[in-house]
Image 1: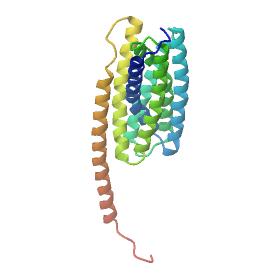
Image 2: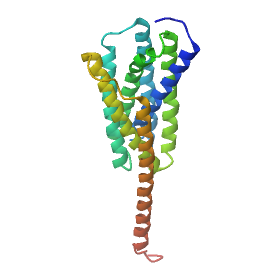
Image 3: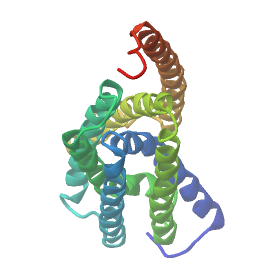
Image 4: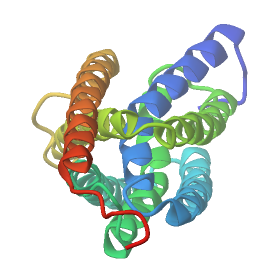
Length: 243
């Protein structure tokens, strides 16, 4: 570990941080839109507070070196958050209108993922550079990218129900893949056996495919529902004027 800063290493850490943020953005966005729209900002606040605490812990851990149980605890927090994100994504698909208890699951998911993700990114960043400055820059870039991308996805989801279904499908798939990767990394760290986590590029490709397929299926379902509602409205007898 050093305080030297090479531009190439800084660029590599920045790009890796952006990839990490993109892989986490869809589970976070699916968790944020699970409840009523009035609760979407609360999920965003939970994510922001979780990220703030996670970046502080990760920065301290990066500076002082291995921080004992912080690594496994952050992995457990991330796993629990990803599990809640899967549940939230399924609820987005099942429930056309969000409920308060569904929003609570999404808020918990956003807080736990925000708290656990930064510390889990530290080993990957140190694998690219031994400079503490590059690692800290990568942590900040990941947090900022998460806020920007998740905010954009939530704004897009507010426009059409089909897009909500697409983001939910991508969030569920992304959370499952990231959960498997986190479990593999945790097993390797604790037991010193097993392969490393799944490649980020593979995760991103699968997530994008799930987003596209989910959006197409959602658009078809919404079209069918709209036609059914129109047919039901046309078949209902109209009361006479003045009745």
